Structure formats: C-alpha cells, structure tokens
Image (cartoon, rainbow, N blue to C red; front, side, top):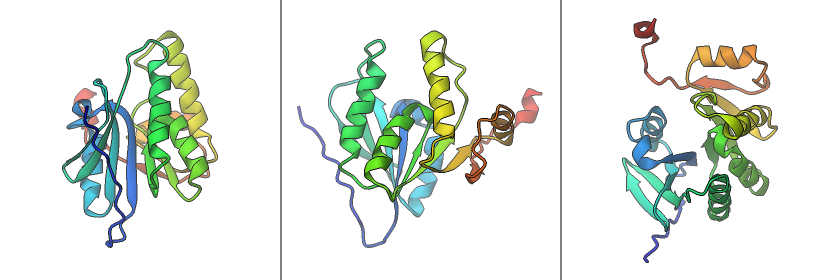
Length: 193
C-alpha cells in the first residue's frame, strides 16, 4: 500500500497556513459552503482541509487550490470517532498551522493541537447546532458545543447566520469576549417563510 506524504511548505510568499478541520468526507463537502469558503481563501492563504475517508490509508491531494488531507474513519460503534480524533491529532502535531477553523465535533483535536502550538489561532465554525442525532450521540454533541463555545483557547467564532447567532446568544452559549463573524450559506430564507 502506497502512502502519500503531505509536506506543508512554507513558501516565500509568507502566506499563513490555514487548516479547515472537518469530520466529513471530501465527497460530502463538495458544493458545501465551508469548502467553497476554503477554496475562495486559497488566493491569500495556504489552505488545508482535513477530511475523513472510508478506506484504509492516508491520502493527500490538491483540489481547487486547497491541499486535502484524508484520514481513514473506522466505522466502529462508539469508538470510530475516538480513533479518528487520535489519528488526526497524531498527524497534525507534526505540522504548523497559523489558524485552525474547526467545528464543535472535532474541537478536542484542535484543543490538543493548541496546547502544543501556542501561537496558533483556533476559530470555532458553527454551521448548525446538534439536532441530527439522538441519545448518547446528541448528548455528546451538546457537551462538545457548549464546551467549545466557552473554551479559553478560542480566538474567534464564525456562525452561518445572524439568526443562529441570536439563538446561541439566547441560550447563553456565546462567549462575549470573542469576535464573531458571519459566513452565510447563501440560502435565501424568505423562500422558506
């Protein structure tokens, strides 16, 4: 089995290295807002997107100017996500990223990375709240969201809409000391009302 090695280059253009830490497969991300944002940032930054894949082995490729790092996700009940976090952290600790943009589901990996790389900035990106799961998974997702929103390692938060921000504010989940930016999905809400 051949493994592609991803080498993060520090080019003379002095661009910052930005990692989008995602728990989706790259196939599921194509066309999604977060990957479109990542692609648009390639003009100013060295962009890396960490995604999961179902096959064994690691893969590194370039799509739309962004460097894609694919890590295997083992579909083992209750332990697959835990193993994915461990593998992701082991790989990331060898690299330097100036900024990590992460969702709440992978926040623990960004937290551990920040402990090793004090100068890195962590931005929590909230595309949705945990609603698509039940039982233990929903409970864990809610804890991850609450913990990540109130963590002292965050440099900022991005939210998909102002209404999502207002919802988080109503629930007293937003840390008021942090800058907040809105990365819209481009959806026109008026067609749903």
